[in-house]
Length: 335
Ligand code: FDP
Image 1 (cartoon, protein in one colour):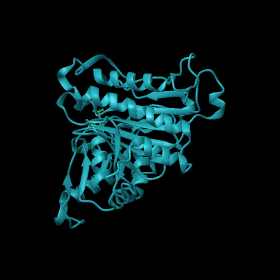
Image 2 (cartoon, helix red, strand yellow):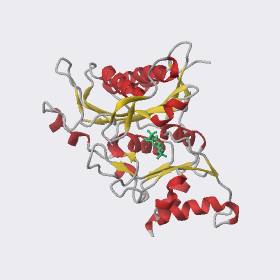
Image 3 (cartoon, protein in one colour):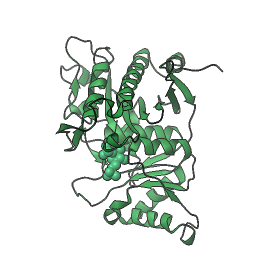
Image 4 (cartoon, protein in one colour):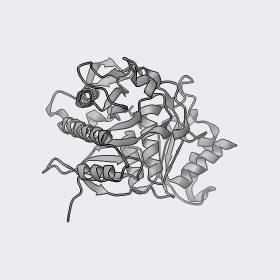
């Protein structure tokens, strides 16, 4: 059987004019970085990298040592290649500037270096999520790239992807031409294409939500989840099953593979936070991947990819996955 590696796939995409040489290089560099992060995660307790690093990130959350390591790996891998104008990360308050000693490129890279980090210490799958935007021309002419350059709707993303560090390390990628998954072959170290043109089934019997927040959900979500829980005896006349890993990457990966609906909806738990997940480097890349695979992604009120960002680290409600279920719960929000 002939195996298609990530490099082979990207060269094909370049030949078909779906990506330029710089974007191909960018994805290759991110792929190398996620392999290094996967190796660090895979060492588990063998190195002294589990536990807390002693700081807090911009969201006021405790940083785990591996969060910091993963962030550094992505920054170092990407800053010298000449393909980026700047980077932004969940772990950094402000955009990371490309050092003067390196050339600057025309793209912006955003990432959540280690998503699901509360799962690191217990050996449950975590991941990396990333998104690529074009740097607006007026911004690239200035010495410092500010937050405003990044504030583009998700529909402007050129590339979106995530890596999941589970039993295998996989990279799931879209360059706007469907969704492909690559798996690290531990013998050769290469990412090999293992799922082509992935599709999220339109219907599902599986849902994922942190039900401990139920008392703070808005009425449309209460109604929708109430119906799923009622199963055959309720309005849906069908039983549903629940799965919640608690790592967005792992939950979304399951949904991409076999269908389902993932929800981190708006709630009233903390009125200053309209949702838990971050728009720019969690919701947007996942929404692009899910849409490219035939699924849907909304905030309940609008398509995630249409949300005009106001802040680099802004939070947003997320409802994504099997199209018919996402459309149903979104319709419940309309009235
Ligand atoms: P974590 O805080 O562990 O990094 O991105 C945040 C995230 O994980 C998601 O991966 C996950 O879906 C969600 O938060 C889990 O949050 P709860 O613990 O509030 O359920």
